[in-house]
Image 1 (tube, helix red, strand yellow):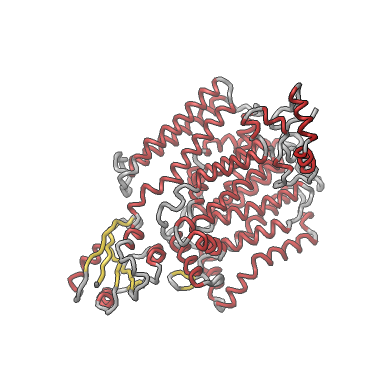
Image 2: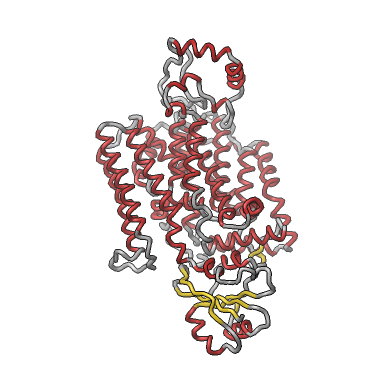
Length: 628
């Protein structure tokens, strides 16, 4: 009898995802014989004869008899897993993607730079406010320009590359988990990654971090794929992905994945596998992908872009805290817990069982050893190297931002998914009180989110805590708390019936809803407190087509340029403000309200106030003044 099972790599030492059962019985067998002799059956046999690859048609097929085993079993294959992951990604990332206005300063700078390049038809030189911009390489701008061509220059198109990069990361994490452990662990890892709050937030944010994460993940995926096949060198596919990572964010796109691979091979006593002609070939592929644009922009700008990018935004950011973005060496510990919420409640148990597996197992140093030998120990070593390299590097850097450590999220998701899958199947049995403590922490996340939302909304006052109040945020307290409290309660009741799978499904579904609420829709609650777009709307609708001028004084946000769609002059003194408003052309000035109150009496000539808004970033009122 044929056996039911998902197509894909089978790793020794790992229990199959579903028990094998006969496919055909009685009438079902005769039906199967008729299908096998039909034209469709012949096509199926031809497709099953194709080589099995991570993205092959063969890997996406399922035996016909499984169609009579229920909806969930029909989805229990690679095609079904892909469909579920894409559906979850679409539900988390696409709704409200273009709803909020651009976030300053990063989204404003990146999107305006891409808009200017797109308008000028220039794919080489990045400019922002029509000045050379040396902050980031070009990959994000290229993808935004392509999106602008299809959807127009707006918020949705500006953020679409990040959302698509998140989809790539989720699917690649699934494939990596499937190869390292099993299909169930891979599926759960993809869901965990997509449901992490900071990962989902990065998918809604127009900056290069999501692209860097997806590219580094691809580089490490192809490295592991070759390592599992017994080829220990740096593959050309890994090199191509690293080239994209360098185009996304710079040297860290090559340095950190290469360091992960080097440390892993050193830990496995297999460094001699790097010495091969294959390494030279891979390096040439990397240069072919990454080098042309860097060389071209260096030549065209006479080295100005390269010097600014390397000295200020690489060496400078590592050695000194820029733009007040500093922090201690332990800065990323709370950031990691908050960014991976709500799954962070399982990190302690994951760390314990992972480290116990790695160090309790007898180490081997055979040069020809593959992951199929000692079970999943090499995979755990690889993931630990991955986490350690990114965490230590960015902790040592002086400039710190929460999204810098985004590339280690897939490794954390894989380790956590492995633990949860083994616990679900009863292979490991943590003390019941530890699982209960994790569920209690899950409930506390909901309570904490509710308290925070009420405090920001001004409904609840927390002693000793000063923050900017944004009325309306308290509505999220009503939504956040029941989700996590309900998930914890449902999981606890199911565990009392020994239904681990049901408990995991309850926690997963509630966590995804919580993340969608926080990362996807939470931004809409503060939209009324972001001034730039609302201020620009007070300008005449035809100001982009008229010969007019726009300027700021004592106030600037990059998204002003994006929404004005023209150069915004930054004035440096009161006299420049007076001269600007007394000019012959229609002029529009963005200025803090207190500054305008001090200057208004000195203005000679016609002037009037067009609008006034409270600015979230500077926490003060900003006005728009015109001489018309």
